[in-house]
Length: 238
Length: 238
DNA sequence: GAGTGGTCTAGACCACCCC
DNA sequence: GGGTGGTCTAGACCACTCG
Image (cartoon, rainbow over all chains, first blue to last red; front, side, top):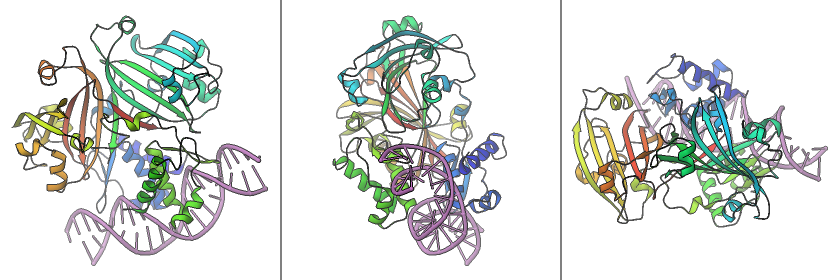
């Protein structure tokens, strides 16, 4: 683990454990340099991680202080925490997840999808629809398109677990980032049936393009989340 | 303007203007050091800005490359671009915005709101409900609570324009960050009436706690956006 | 004025990619 | 092996806050 990651992790633990609470001042950057035997840039980088995670604020001329922690950190049902990135299986790690594969075909992408995935409509993509179930509650239906060339070897068995696990652990490919757009929409009849919804229950739609670390988009997906079970959280910094 | 900001801005312009397009490699960090007469850390910082904005990806051992630009950048109707932070008036600057103040009272906050704003239920908050209209289209109803002590001098006239403008320009206070949670919900009857919605049209709800640069939360708000006119975009980086 | 974090430098070494 | 970006150092000066 990198130095700045380790230091950030240490501080995060100390805050979680109550060594520092709302409004408390953290040790000075100068002092932390001595404590950890590192340069100030490294300390700053660690602190900036905590700022990004919404745990602390820095005030030039004064110091670094713990933010008011609200209930978000206790919430279990958020789609993403902070601006981190993870798939469904990873987000709910440790709980009981099951998956029902509703569709698994190989097709040509539409113009729109081909454009987003930077490929030709002559190439092929997996066309996948999955219902993800958390502790026996149907949570989300995911519509996924992935170029077969970039993500070879997808089988039903993989779809029933985690595509991302397959990509990272088996194919050894690195996922870097995702562009997401969140909307509120109505559910389709199929979704009402699969997720046991009333006809006019709203749906939280997340459209996503995910990128490998080489910059290539490898996934275009639309997820329809039960509105009563899901929310999307983000921290914006000016 | 800071050096790294200026460099990032220059590169952003060059990308927008097509000097570099999808997949192109940007100049090496080493070369850019010479061009701009700065150290490598400064160049890296500038490049990291572009990564955060989703414009480029960096590959260790290879170089820095322009990402596939999708249509998001052309969209006008996003609530927030990237992970930036801004109010309604700022987001739609240059277009015709009007505001209808539906409620403006001073009350004690509920337990829940007091907790989020880190204040006592004995203190007072502004209790504001506003309908925001863009080019004659009712877009969003905002329910806002703000401690009167932190944001003094709010008047009807200010509500009809921009609270944030008042805070930053008149009160000279610095807004630093916001924690947001996005959900899909049903509209209320009042909202249906004000925004001319059908009873079961979905609503995109954004719950927000906004912070000053001293770390104090100064605003708790819930915004209900017309689902057909609004979306929320974010870039997640692993 | 003393002390904070913010920016920046000029270098070093490393992990990784590709030839 | 040669070149990329990633991390890190040990300093410097600056902008800001507060007593």
